[in-house]
Structures are given as C-alpha cells and as structure tokens.
Image (cartoon, rainbow, N blue to C red; front, side, top):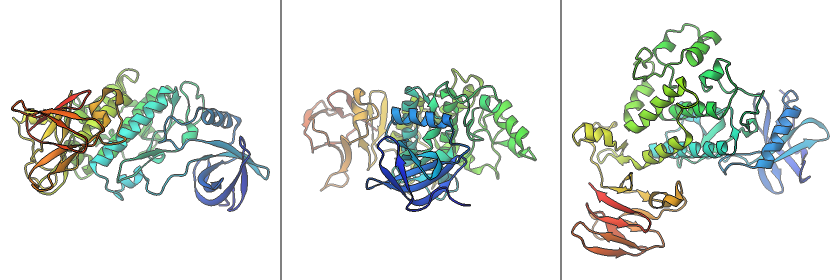
Length: 440
C-alpha cells in the first residue's frame, strides 16, 4: 500500500506557517496515517487523513480542539492543522508518544507485567484525565484498548486519538466507539456517544486492566456458536449481564475458559469489587444515574494504592481489606502467590484514609492537605530504616514544615524537616493541616 506522505516531504502548519518535515511512517488506521516528523527542531507526530475522512466536519472539529487545548498533559492533543500544496486533504500535529509507553493490548497478552501499584496509578491517571475532559463539556466517544498507553513501570498514562473528541451532545455523526467497549444503549442504537456512555467504556477499560477479561463475557458467551453481529448485539446490548451479578449467576466465568478473571477478582479489596459491580448492574439498568463517576474511580484508585502490602515471605503485592479483616475476626488472609499468612505492616490513619506503611511507602500532599487533593507531585514523607538499628523504622519528614508528634505515653516532640518519627503504635503525627495516627 502506498503511503500518503513520503520521508523528507514537507507540509505546512496552518496557523504559524512553519514547515513540518516527514521523517518516518509509524502506522495507519481507519481514518488516516501517522508519521514521525520534525517541527522547529522538535520531534512530533503527524496524522494525515485519508480523503474520505478529510471532511469539513472533521476540520471544524479539529479547529475547535486546537483552540480549546488539552484538558491536561496526559492527552496527545491536536496542536495545529497542517496542509500541503501537492497532497489533497489535511492533517494535524500532536506530541509524539515516548517508547516507554505500552498499549493495553500488551497487558492483555501478558507481554508486560506491571505491578498492582502501577495499575492503580494508571487507573488514577485515566479517571482523573477523563474527569477533566468531561468537566470541559467534551465527550471522548471511543475509550478503548487502542487509545490508551501507559508506562508499566510507573503507571503514567497517555491518551491518544483525540481527534474524535467532540463537544458533548453535538456529535451527530462520526465514530460510535469500539465493539465490546460501547455502552449497551449505543449498541442498541438508542443513543449516540456522550459523557454518560464514556463512563461505561471507562469502566470496561478498567475492568480489562485489573481482571484481564471483559465484564460481560461468561457462560453465555461460551454458549454462542457464532459470535456474529446479532449475537454480539445480544451479549453487549440487549441482554448484557455482569459475570459477577449478585442476583443472577447465569453468566458466571467458567474454569478453563475464563481463568484470568477467576484468579484476579478475589485478589482485590471489596470496595473495588463493589464499584465494578455497580458499574455493570446499576450502571447498565440506569445509564443516567447508576454509573460510577470518574471521581469515584479516582478515589478508589488512590485507596487501592494505599492498601498495598507486601508478603514478607515471597514479596508479592497483596491488599489490606478492612472488610475482610472484620469478617475474619482480624485475620488478614493468605498471600495469593505463596499461600502463607499475610503479615500486616503498621498503618497510618489520616482522617478517613488508611495508608499501609511498607518499606517503600511515601506520603504526598494529597494525603495531608484537603486543598491539594490528588497532588502526587513531591513526597512529603517516606518510610525509612534507622541507619544504625535496622529493626527500627520511622517516617521521615520530607516537607519544609515542622511536624509535631504525640507518642502513646503523651510525650510531645517536634520533627523538623529531614528528621524522622518512629513508627510506634499510638503515635499521633500533626502534619499541620491534618493529623494521622499510627496503628498496628
């Protein structure tokens, strides 16, 4: 297949009039082709539309997006339109994705094995980013595997293919979404994509990320002999049923066929399972009021990060689950990896939040200041080991402010920046705007 543009070919940016030089073909899709290019000494990505997609409507949509700018830095957002005298149609430039970012498909095929912390961070980034997009009155329309990339080491996220974003309620045509990710009402042809249908697609994407499986594919899927359009319409549109629906077990995942979700589902704390259950029960029955909001996913992802504990025997990540602990009479359960009983580290309760104090735990402005919610820019505290007595652990003050601690016996001490407070049960730490208590 001949490519639209060739290496060293020059196109012009329409606003600034700068030359943009094509360097390398990166890939193509249904709408056009993407190239690596150079603009004013910087490497960028250049998308050029096929003639069928280079419509006046698409141009107008891009102009709106360029004018608005990205909701945050996670979006590989259209920066400027491009054109060329010798090539029909138009394109646009956007930031180029770094090679450290991998696709969700790599996760599904187990080509990458991120930690639970990285997954929770990716879930936090996604839910926070889509919240900011929706807060600007925009609808993404096509949340799916192909449009999200993340760093498997850190969980940092990038969201691409933003040229399909429209003002919510104004997208009369264009893309409806990706099969398996579209909300049931879109599958049934009852509505067009909106912020409400984005919420369903986001829930499906998160379920895939954490369970490596689709939330509606259980026993019913196995009974389908030909997964044609009518069958898919039933499974995802007219008769959708969550595989862990608490009131209907007729679509449960089957051993030998759906082993990923059977293994992963019980690993997570009850609060996360409850959110997924809401997303695919009430969220299906009541699209307007029953769906899990981006802010709810965001809070859950932070809580999930804070719930991680390491098995002292094999090092595997497990989760502290307060509900399981209460139900079992204080027993934290067994490690999913080695089967030995989990030994919980100390934890600190700050307001309604509990953070497990592992060897690598850090606290951020988010944890200690309600005015800095979801601020994970710089740590303000870190768990550290005593340099001379390794059995003693402390919480080092990495902030610029003095802490005041009150020990279990009532002794009051200052903890200056750079100093540490011992992780002793009953110690209260006043961080300035809030107070935490260390518990066992």
